[in-house]
Image 1 (cartoon, helix red, strand yellow):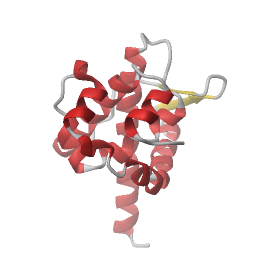
Image 2 (spheres, rainbow, N blue to C red):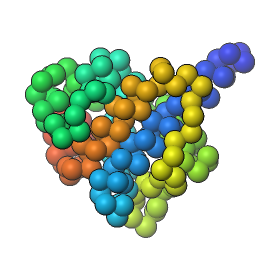
Image 3 (cartoon, rainbow, N blue to C red):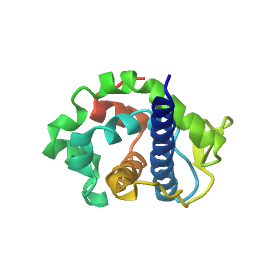
Length: 160
């Protein structure tokens, strides 16, 4: 493995950690700071946010429009999401590992929830390129916080 490849892996995991943290902060805020997202809620986040067409479709949407409206207006949001989720599971786990080890996120085993340790996200070197990803993750955090796990699976056509 070359140094460039290792650097890319670390940067991608770090970006994923920040994206998952942005999602978690918004979810937590919408639950009136009483609950973080259960771990399964985090699994479709990176496959959606790292998918260019999905990010383009959702990162500028209004928060109040909701996930159902976004899906109704763009049916491709759920297209092959299950496959992307399965394929990206190693990247999601690496990003979670970075987020946990860097104290961006904490897993609470007693509740099965993930909590943000800080409301402030670290600065990313390529901030302009990551802004749509962070905005999309924030919207997903807002939208996911309003629905149950069963609804999430039905809307996104995924299973765990």
